[in-house]
Image 1 (cartoon, one colour):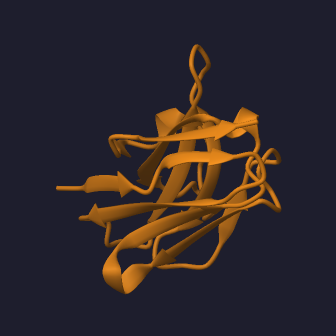
Image 2 (cartoon, one colour):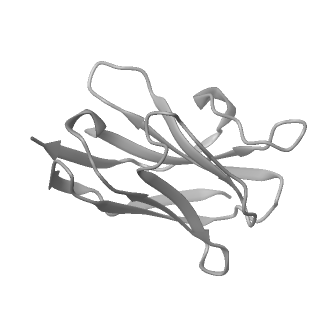
Length: 127
């Protein structure tokens, strides 16, 4: 059974940094991608970044490219999202998720393509 448990959210001022962690159980195949999404109040869930499980290929939304870094410690089964230069518009509930790689090998970006989700971790950026 696949389970994802997040930690590391919190409050920070504009320009600050936070690191989210996602411990996962049961995601052992390289056929999976691990991703981060976020959802601000009243808005749709938005894809942030993804990485191939046990691999190195990473993918980012344009809104976070150059500021956020997704990485993993596969031996420990931990996914990370390092967030730098945070802005108030980054304020959201952040979720980690697992889903199958696309035919062709890249990671999906739609929430519907991820079938296992963490519980969410709140990130608040104040101006």
